[in-house]
Amino acid sequence: MIRINEKINAKEVRVIDDMGDNLGVLTVPEAIKIAKEKGLDLIEISPMTRPPVAKISNFDKYRYQEEKRIKKLRIQNKNQGMKQVQISVKEAQNDLVTKANRVNKFLGENCRVEILLVLRRREKAHKDFAKDKFKEFMKLIKIEYKVLMDIKYTGKGFATQIVKK
Image 1 (cartoon, rainbow, N blue to C red):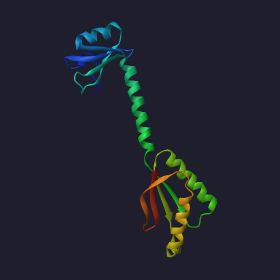
Image 2 (tube, rainbow, N blue to C red; image 1 turned 90 degrees about the horizontal axis):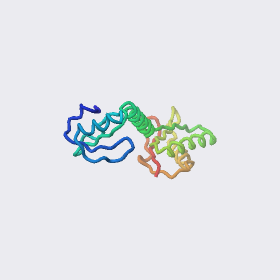
Image 3 (cartoon, rainbow, N blue to C red; image 1 turned 90 degrees about the vertical axis):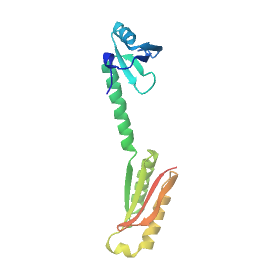
Image 4 (cartoon, helix red, strand yellow; image 1 turned 180 degrees about the vertical axis):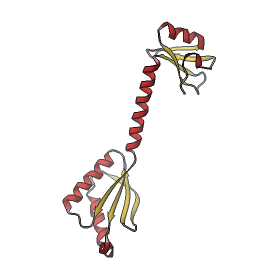
C-alpha cells in the first residue's frame, strides 16, 4: 500500500523533490506543505528505511510508472521459463537444423531449453541409433551451452536440459 500526504505515519522523512534533488530530512507536515505549494503530492516510496524516503510528485504519474515497471518485470520473468524442443529419429537434416536454430534463439534469450527425442513403437528397440542421432543434433547447436541434465532415457525417449554458458 502506497502512503501519500497525511497517510504517512512517520515523524520525519527524507524528501526528494520532483526534479530528483535531495531536500534532506524534514518533518512530514513541512514536506506536505512544500508539496502542496508545488501542486503535487508527497509519496512514501521507501517505508522500511530510517528515516523513510518520500518523493514530491504527481501521484497518478507515479502510480502509472510503477505499474509500467511491474509489467516489464513480469514480461522478463515470463521469458526466463523453460522452453522445449522436440525432435524425432525420422526427421530430415534440414528439419534438425531448423530446430537447432530455434534452440540457439532460446539460448540467446537466456532461457533454459529442454530437448526431447521422442521414440515411438518399434523405434524404442533401436536406442543406440536414437542416442547417436540425439548427439548429432546437439552438435548442430552453435551457441556455447552448459548441460544441466545429462542425456537420459525416459519412458518416451531421450531428454536433456541446457542453458547458455
